[in-house]
Length: 47
Image (cartoon, rainbow, N blue to C red):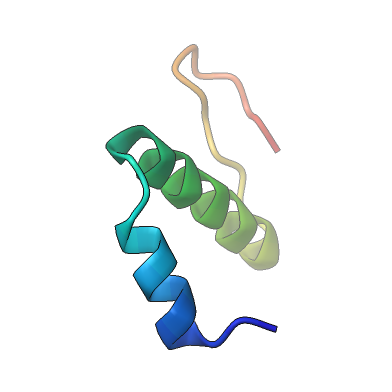
């Protein structure tokens, strides 16, 4: 298992686009945990 400090080091190395994908993934995961629905660009629920 990767430590948080190791994960942060690896995240810093990612491209800008990859960082946005990680953010989107994490936001989706957090929304699921909270029972929320996220909207895509066409205002359609993605969860």
